[in-house]
Length: 380
Image 1 (tube, rainbow, N blue to C red):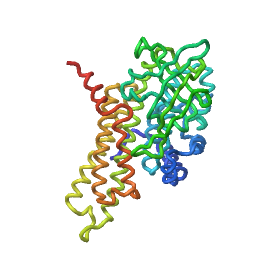
Image 2: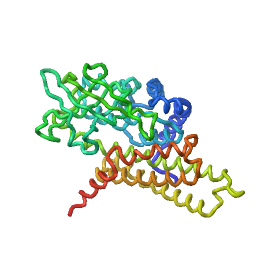
Image 3: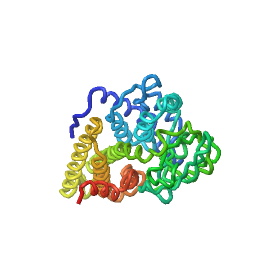
């Protein structure tokens, strides 16, 4: 499907990103999956290649270009090159809006340059053992003590948890106020009482480290409060649509990648003396998958345009996240089926894509939560 939302500048960025991932990342697939994390060196190389922090103002080393199409291209080329594990989207898609909109002048000077160079790797710590999609139920606290906050609690399912040197922690500074008492604090590596737990052994996305984090009387300077105390929940809700749209982009990209490699496989793999693609049942399946993927891109590009125009609503972002990830899973499952028994062999990329896609329906808010968000907006 021909897409019309990109300019020549976007195409140049796509070519640059594709070349970077093919050279610097894709060859390390087996190594990173075995290690359960990527190297931190690749972040610095990505920074040198201009693939990180382009929204950062020029005075802090960035380009000052705010355009989600660049974010989408990066996610698409990660998938298109078979790259695994790189958590660049945490910095570019999730953390960036917080650091651009909520930081003081002093914080900008401290934190923004590292986003551009890749020296600062970030994680956002929201989910807890007893609070996943239900953000209001978090139990981590941050009690003010002079010029510091004392943070106590635990987090889980934290992307970049093992390699991040800056953790954006959601905590309750006023537990009695419920979600109106939430605040955002930046915990940095080396602060006493901050401990990384085990690296979680996941079904898929094995090259991306996902961790437990623990905070035991961690003394965080008040200078690391991000935004206004008590406005943490509000700021989270404001930025979640961008995060969910980023997940939707990856969903469409994985569906496209699965279709592409499956089409090639069915054209070359022979059964009963003829290519799998020549059987009517296979042709019909491939035709249906192609149509679904084409519709994915059309709908997604409309959402990207709406986000750029500051018109994308929380409900629309929830719809996009829900529909694209459910369609992604359907496409991946059907593509694996077309590979036959080889689809279940880890040597084949379709097996990894299938494993990696399952979590898309969970993180960033489960499909059921997305339906709840959309449903509540309908009234009645």
